[in-house]
Length: 462
Image (cartoon, rainbow, N blue to C red; front, side):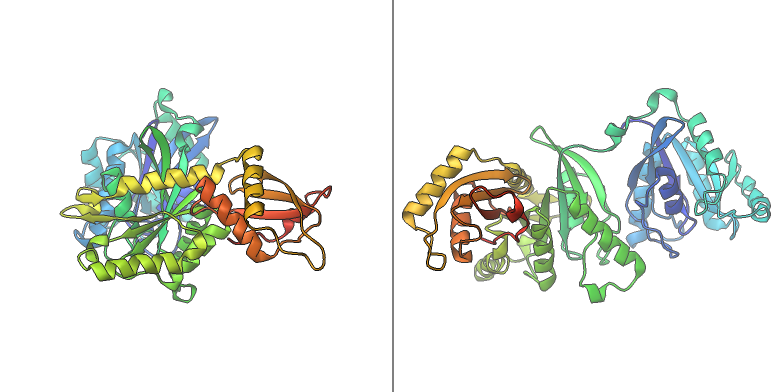
């Protein structure tokens, strides 16, 4: 992680994510009045007095719990502490200090990092007086603030800049990773975070058997074969009626927003379960939003020994997700000790990234007009368009008007004159010739000499 980094650390439910959102000026972290909402490390860029610095939000540390999900959360927080140039240790001014605060203070003292103590939830002068008890920690300067209301945040930001080296301020473009954006999406427990960790070869995101472990959408810069990528881990999406808690609803919204800002979606399916209604909804949602889709049939090791089941599973995926137009299907597995931390044996993960890059190229492909018209003439010669009422249909000229996703416009002797079956026939030919697999392609037929009004017409589906 380049540039100055400020880590926000503390026990659960003291307002770390609220402070993170206040510093970066956006609601990136999920905030709810329940402990344990933040789990993975979440990075953002803060700017104050013309200078920028990176901020990382961490999950609440509970020293009394040393296994399961709390153990993973603490491990992620400790990585952030190790990376940080400055630590904001957040305590609760209302509840006062507790044993967990003192244990975390000792952990931070041993880290050797610069520390500012932030007494959050000081919405009044009375609470500000109560917050002075945090001096007992003996960690340095105390800042009573209200992250929710913005009280005394400016003083805290001044102190942050004073404690960060001048030459370590990152430019905004350094903090906003560039490259082909690939979102890993799917139902809870399908194996999205395991795949991410296996690709990065480190425990970058938390993996736990508890469904819904991932809450925030995490952007992870990565390089593959010399090409910059941004891998996005997202929360598992349940059926709408199963999403009851506010934090799960917000996590689902953030996953959908992550889909909006990506180019390729890797739909992670559990091979032992197969395609569910929710998988189909996710795939259709991505396709309708103009995203390329690659299928990762994960946990393939659980079905590969049964050849009949393996064949059925592949056929099921091809049939149930046929509307994706022959997406690339990659059979993946991560097995062995440490697989959830990226240390096990992983199979076919490079194939997933190769498929994503091919799909991204297809999504942004611009087909030369001469080649497109050559294919159109060949299609007409092989299968001429049906009559439109009593009039013959003449397809005169084709051009690609847009990419990401591709839009092909055909000029004809009249507008909207092609039957859906013939449009699908043309689209199949275009897809086959230019390998537009797993990519939504739109087709518009308009009368010669007309404007672009026909573009508003719903695209035909191949």
